[in-house]
Length: 307
Ligand SMILES: C[S@@+](CC[C@H](N)C(=O)[O-])C[C@H]1O[C@@H](n2cnc3c(N)ncnc32)[C@H](O)[C@@H]1O
Image (cartoon, helix red, strand yellow):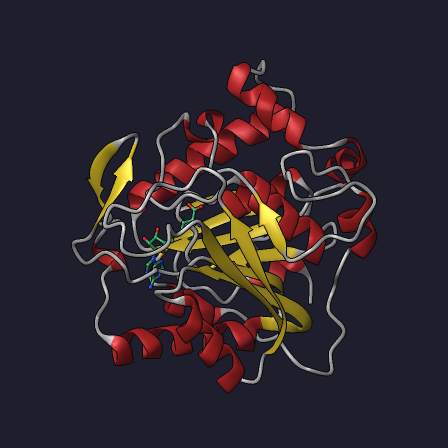
C-alpha cells in the first residue's frame, strides 16, 4: 500500500496538513476506524492518565493543582479500562504485522493499559522506566516521590519481527541521559529531563513530553519513511521527532488549542529544515537535535501522505 492511500478513507478533512505531517481534530477512535488495516508502522500513545481528580502537586516551588483538563478525569475503574481496551484494539487493527506500539503512563493508567495489551494479544517487548531527575517533591510526605513514568513497548503479534535499531541505541550519542554509558547496550531505565524552554516557546501542553524521549523512541523502532501515528497527539512532540528524522506523521486530538500549538511547532521545524527561516536561539536547539547520521534522512524525497 502506498503512503498516499493510507489516509484516503478518512472522511473528514485534516485540521492541518503539510507534506508528511497531518493532524485531525477528532476522537481518535473515529479516525482509527477509517484507516486501512495493517497500514501503520509505529504508534506512540500518551493517553489520558485519569489522574485529574482534585489533587495537588508542587510547581516552581508553589502548591499547584494536578488537574490537566476534563479529558484527564477518571470515569471509574471499569469505564477507564474499557476506554483503554477500545483504543488499543483499534490501534492493533491498523498496525502493520511487523509494527509496534508504545504506551506511556503513570501508575494511574499504565497497569490497565498493560492488562488490555495482553488481553488483546499484543506481545510486550519492554517496559521502560523514564526517570525524571527533576521531579516535583511529594507534598504529603507519606509516600515516595513519584519520579518516573513507565512506557510499554509491544509488537502487534508474537511471531512477527519488529524493528529495533540496536546499533544506534548502543553506539549512538545520548548525551542527555546520565545513565547511558557510551558503547554499552541501552538499558530499560532512561534518564531524560522534562521539556526545555525552547520546546515551549509557543506555549505548552499540560503533559507535554520532551523531544529527547520521542527522538529515542522514533529512532529505536522505525526506519526512514515509516508512518508514525499518535492517537493522543497533544502538542505533537511525536510528530516533531518523526519529521525531524525523516518519518511521516499522523496525529489526532480532540482539542483544537493543542493542534494549534502542534501547528506552530511543526511550521517552525519545517522552516528550519528547508532553511526558510533564520534560526533563532530556540531553533538552534532543534537543529542540534538532528545529529549527523540522521541529516541524510531529511534529504530523502518526502512523499505526500494525503491522496
Ligand atoms: C497525555 S496528553 C498527550 C500529550 C502529548 N504526548 C504531548 O507531548 O504534547 C493526551 C491528549 O489526548 C487528548 N485526548 C483525550 N482523549 C482523546 C480522544 N478520545 N481522542 C483524541 N484525543 C484525545 C487530550 O486532549 C490530550 O491532549
